[in-house]
Length: 413
Image (cartoon, rainbow, N blue to C red; front, side):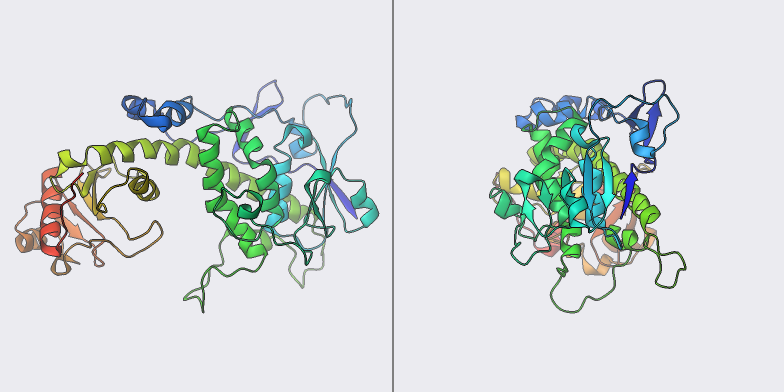
């Protein structure tokens, strides 16, 4: 049995001088100017947008020594016993690496030692145990999922949630502590719309995949068409010693695994908080203004490209009870030209609701303008899901022509 205290300094954090804390390094520009006009529109505008516009995630008061295991500043005198997070030794996986990382984001466990062992006596001395021990007992902070009797999912533990994937140790920790962790990082109440939205988003798009892979749940029925070998779980797995390495010690690799999953978790939270969440405001505003773009009401115009609009569009279609589906989205690209993109049939689908006309596909520039009779055409993708024009008016005319040629109908409200 080995004990490991802390982990390497996360690449997404930097030490705040003289204070021994770590502060998140944020990416991207300030969204306040772009979203200010939308503040006040529904609950999201009153709560979510305002929270996002405050700027970077709040500083996390984690002592540098607790992360690195050494620390360069003066040591803080310990006034309380050191808490211990127990997990198994030997070959490690993504789920327990993330579970340990998440626990150490909680104030209670921020200085905790990570004890890697399968010795029941050693595990009994730990304050919280994940992915080992053969029991799930949240009152005693035991979070294993390998026992035959374990069948818990996010939905079984929180009936308001839709996800039925069997939980791993990562999902168990996230289920019980995720809202508290996010509230602390964001400086928001646990029941705020911001925390609720990001809690769901991070589970569905980050933690659930780890749960499924660790429990051996296939993503699709039948034989996959190609291999996925660069996901986070695979990359963590490759940090284990190779079978023929002379040194089979796993301690350094587990430390790197915690750093890797922690970096990706925080980076994903940063993106969802600073980019994905504000995009909802823009998409909702575009939906409400859709008849100003075209009388059909099936086209949206976004003020800029790169906005993650798809998932918001599908959820807002349901929430706003639109009678007919939205079909096309227009937006400027970074060069100042315009794009028109077909709405897919689902958030993760490659199939389009209304692809651009087949004769246009794969044709470019002047040849495309002559074919369509629309000046300024740049391209239409070979699959028909997106096209481009030099001007807004040209892109809008391509969208209208697509609607006429492909048989789209008008929306009535």
